[in-house]
Image 1: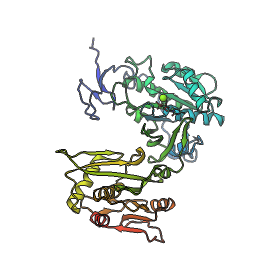
Image 2: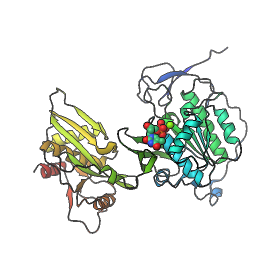
Image 3: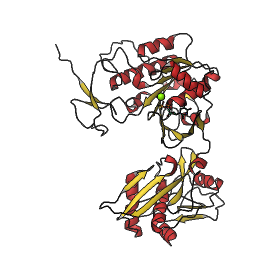
Image 4: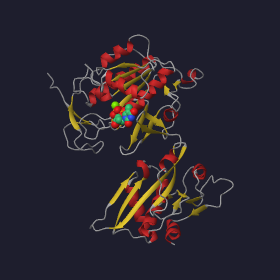
Length: 455
Ligand code: TYD
Ligand code: MG
């Protein structure tokens, strides 16, 4: 008899290894590899289905399907991120750190949909029905008609969902609590999570329900993270934010039915999440424009402009290797800006500690923030505050040149709307507004900017 084979699976990214190792080759994480049962789960056993499919001519589908049938939640920030509502027959993964507000967000979405007459089932594997009901009461959602179930077994959940009228919208909270009789390994392992998610995705496809799967992001690798099922679902949203701050950002990472660079902004209150229609006002809310080291960056998130303050503190270091601490931005990008400042602008920061912070716990992904970061650094080093009514954007290249970025007009329009009369931007920017305001300073090199700030 063949010896039963075991395999070793990274609980972070799902990479399969032949033997145990401390570090995963797939994602580089440490201590995330555990022994897993290869039987059961997807692709585990031999295929038993012998049914034949029938190919269909692509052209014959034309006209039959116009748009994916959507269920709009009518919560603006949520619909913006999904691209206009949840799509029937699709599965969406909502990932995020534990305690960030995923259950809160989805209970509010469930209530909004139930109030529109949809049949909504909320399956909680983490909390008892009484706990979920208590939360719903706090959110003012208790009388909305959402159906609750507290179950973790995949087969039980499917039986519950098949009872009565077909659901339009199903929430599974969370994928890490799912376990199936068919998979041999312990709940929370990659095999169990994949088996459970696979069953839920199939249910959505077969019945036309919109399925939302909640997944906790795990740092220690003890249970499988949402990344191991990202490829199985139609859309992936991440809910992020800083515990120390009240607002939360819902970000699209993957979307088969819409754009992937949208964000939705919410604020956590004692009565749940509230939409934030104008994020710039929120991020600039507690601004102290008079102190050196603060520059306002005019950024873009998807189709929406976002103004946010970049703060830098540069101070002489007492350490042999000066500190570089970055919150809300890419630390290798900061290293690059520091190198360019040193090599091309004569700004020496080699014996200074450098702290960089994006205000309000916001995270910037755009390289267009280079110019604002450089401005904040130089301003802090020189001890001179930047003009309070000026925004900065532009990408800095290794040669010290400032490169144009996309969506100039949109950034300037938002800045003007919020009372910023001036902007420092790359020269040669396309789509400048036709009546160019007097306050535009187009710069060619980072050295020009340094000369302007430090005089
Ligand atoms: P929760 O939705 O349970 O997080 P997750 O499902 O992502 O683990 O939210 C947990 C946090 O949100 C908790 O610290 C309490 C806070 N919260 C509020 O501030 N206001 C509220 O109305 C609710 C329901 C939760
Ligand atoms: Mg939860």
